[in-house]
Amino acid sequence: MFVPVTDSNNRPLIPTKPSRARRWIRDGGGGAWSRIALCASGKATPFWDHGVFCVRLNVEPSGRETQPIVVGIDSGSKREGLTVKSAAHTFLNIQATAVDWVKDHMETRRDMRRARRFRKTPCRANRRNRARGGIPPSTKARWQWKLRLPRIKSGVARLYPIAAFVVEDVKAVTRGQRPWDVLFSPLQAGKEWLYGELRKIAPVHLKHGWETKALRDQAGLKKTRTKTAEVFAAHCVDSWVLANWYTGGHVQPDNTRLLCVTPLRFHRRQLHRLQPEKGGNRRPYGGTRSHGFKRGSLVKHPKLGLTYIGGWLEDRVSLHCVASGKRLTQQAKPSDCCFLSFNTWRTRLLPGLKTGVSAA
Image (tube, rainbow, N blue to C red; front, top):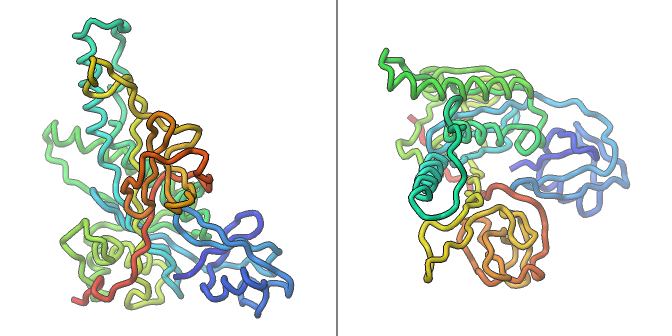
């Protein structure tokens, strides 16, 4: 794994080796780099960006020339693959879990709203349904999540100097039937919106599915049928061959380590819980704040270490495991939690397994 490098103004530069990054952090010297030559007294500051370890230079680099770095994207319904690659190295492989729970949330909200109309409680007058028309919320959330990984504000474009995107274009055959074609049109609108946003960052090259398979067969690679498996051959094998088509330089993958990314599932503020408690009371549920902390924020606890903020109960907050999302406690005092950074997803770096890539 190579370490992303940024200058003092957070502009991305060519990544470096972990050993060189440690030397910069320790003593700031120890030799010149062909791309970025540091002064004898130069130093670098380490930091984490959404689960990726990076270093920030504290001195002005002697050169800013960069080699083309390309992002290959393989979209999927449950998982998505994303590879950051140059002609010399494969810097990062990301397997992301898709956002697929918005439809159920919308149905639950609709049922709760309808149920309130039959109870003897004060309620507002009916008004026009603002949810009708446009792209469905579930489709919109799915494509917005696809953009969060490569965009400049929170994705790989802020860590690497991206020269182009190579995306496997999603295709579906129209049948001339209204239910099928109507359900497909939001997907078509969503992907066109995504391509337009990516073009604001770098040029976009589209590949058909059969072209991706031809590239995969040419490299002698196989793709597993288990789409939810956390292995390189599930999705990143396609994103790798797409990026390698643009950059070249490799016949076989040189880096198969996966960074698994899962978006945090926030329950927005609701008027009440789905079921009343004893006495018929319906307490409020959901929200994005817990005793002054934004939910999902990374905090350091004296006993539990690095965790992230969940819900709240009375005067305590819940803490969850960063890797698995498992709730560790519901009785953490807010005063014991040291805020580190805001966070909207959790990450796990898996080792590169030779069994993750198989030859045809």
